[in-house]
Length: 500
Image 1 (spheres, one colour):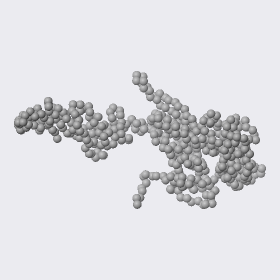
Image 2: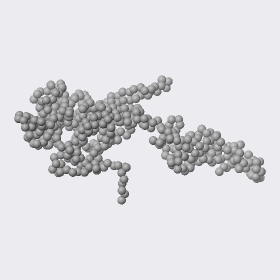
Image 3: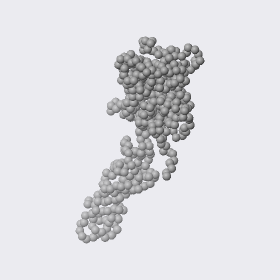
Image 4: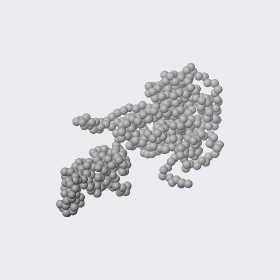
């Protein structure tokens, strides 16, 4: 394996000064075997070395603090290993380096090196040897912080100040669809919302941009000094973003400020929220007038909900009279084509059979209701509402009862539902009351069945374990719900697949 480069002093031969063998004259007057036995140019170069790899992210340590991705037996890995040997190879010249195959699970990497060194004047000795690297496991700083579970550099606190947080359920499905949670180190539910923790500030800013592009909200920023080095002028901060989502959910009764109602086309101030996505969609139940309120308009003149879903009362429909002519005010904007205006005679469910209890109210649910149905609505006659906006309204503009949604048999709807949603937060029952949280999520599923526009922006998965057993007559009275082309197959990589 060793070769000796020599300068010929003449055409004759001489005897080796060590063993007496006949050789061509060279600067050392020794044969190659004697030179090899007496001089080792690999002296000082370790034949075994340690290489550190993070088993979580498969990155290799580059001293002193760097970590790089490198595939096994790649050029990048060869460069990383040679850098470890560089301090011990200052007196020799490296001419070739290559890998020697080893078992991938052996935790060994072998390098075949070829080096040269000038031994005496005019004599250059070349030698080939193998260096073995033992692969050691060591966690990198990033993986250590992730495994600690409590480390974070930036925190995004999503909050919604209302009793029912349907909008947060909708945000959860948006995050799952767009995979906006992949860079989080932890996700923790709290009593008023959800906290998202990130190891990098730029990841938190990206998530802020994602939320503001899908929901009407605003956010505030704060930072906390952790450590600082006065000599090098280095400061270490923890960053916190507090995102406040509008405190309005689907089905809430809202009293708009007078200026806002006039800007939306002279709407009535009492409106019902249809949905909350990029804008707040509201409808006037007495005229079918609809409008969208964006985040800028809302936060310029914010308003609160007048009544939430907790105050809904159940009514029995006695009669339904369609209205053919609608008297609109000047400057009226768009009208809803999915709803039908009707005068509906209702009576509270707990007062059926009593005299003089029927109340006539104008509603946008004429396309759904018929005599004998049950409907949920807000009874403003018995509601104790503290609102300065409502006190300033004329009494003839305030309806006694405002109907919101039709009542369906929940058990039949659950049996009929052949689809499901994935959940991002599985342990929310540790923070909230499990029964109330389950009831709120069930209401969110019912909202998805009734609202096609909300279903278009989230992923709905087919529930293969659910068998449909229901009557066609009963199903015809229920909302249509998601169709088969709206559902996705839930892929389970752990399931056995039979190959034909």
